Image (cartoon, rainbow, N blue to C red; front, side, top):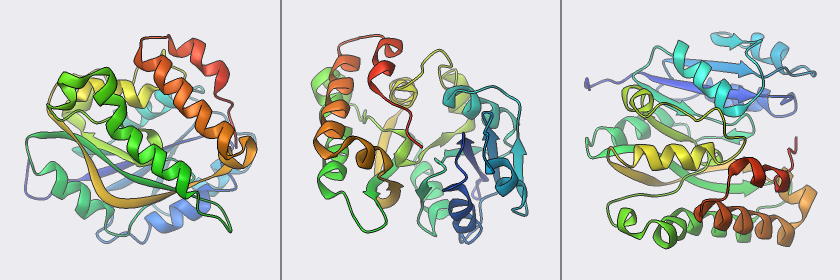
Amino acid sequence: MSDISHVSIIIPTLNEGGSLGRTLRQLAMLEPLAFEVIVVDGGSEDDTVAIARACVGVKVICGVGCGRSLQMNVGARVAMGDILCFVHADTLVPDDLVAVVRQVLADSRVAGGGFISLMCGDLTTRWGVSLHNYLKTYYAPFLFKPWRFFQGLRLLFGDQVMFCRRSDFWECGGFDEALPIMEDGDLCLKLGQKGRIRLVNRIVQSSDRRVVRWGVWKATAIYVYIGILWGVGVDANYLKRFYEDVR
C-alpha cells in the first residue's frame, strides 16, 4: 500500500431523510477529507436522495435494488479508493476518521477494523446497551470461534463503521447479498482469514432509534438472542424476523 491511501466512504440508505444530512455535513468537515463519499440508495420514498444530491462532491447511486449488502457492494464496485469505509446514514464519526483508518491499515497484519459505537439519542446516551455491544465484539468470537479469537478475530457490526482494503474486500467476495442481516459479521469471518480484525479505541456515535422503539431490555435481549443463534449456525433469513427495520 502506498504511503497515502485513498479512503472511499460508502453509505447505504433507505428513507434516511431525518439522519443523512447531518452525517454528510460532518463528513464534509473531516481532516483530511475522504477521497470520495458514495451514497447508494435502495429506493427511498422520502427526501433522502434529494439531500444526498444537494451535497457538493457526493456521488449518488439510485435504482440498484434494496438490501444493505447489495447496496454496499454496488458502492464498493464504483469506489476508486484503495480503502473502503462503510458508514451508516445515522452514524457520526470523528473528524480524523481518515487518518485513523489509514494508520490502522498501515499494519499489514490487520485486515479490517471498526470503532466503538456509542448509542445516543437527543437527550440520552445508552450506556448499558453500548457497553454490551462493545463486549460482544470480544465475547462472541471467544465463545463461538475461540481458536480464531486468539488469532485476532473480532466481531464487528455496521454501526461500528467497518473498514478494510478494497483488494481484501473483493478477494473475500464482498458482502453476502443473500444475507438480510449479519452481513457485517459474515464479512468479519472472511476478512479474519486474511489477518487480524482491529477494534479501534475511538468512538463513533450511532442513533438509538431501535432502543427507543423496542425499549432497553427488549433491544438487549434481541441482540443477544440473534447473536447466539447466528453463532451456532442458524440461518440469517430466519433471524431477520426478529430484527425489525426501524427508521
